[in-house]
Image (spheres, rainbow, N blue to C red):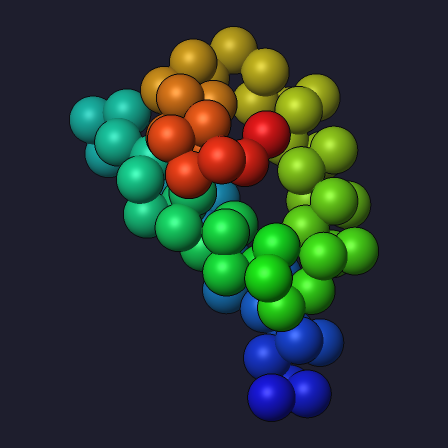
Length: 68
């Protein structure tokens, strides 16, 4: 479990690689990271808020899982 907590952020798919603007998979990975490594989740979330601010479907998928 310690391995996953330390390295989960490396497995989260990058939003720019999404096909057909479907970010469900990305949001699910972020939800897992929020549970296992909340600090890494917050760091990546802050990066995404700047880099991917215009990807509305990403933020909708995140909101559907209670993330944001």
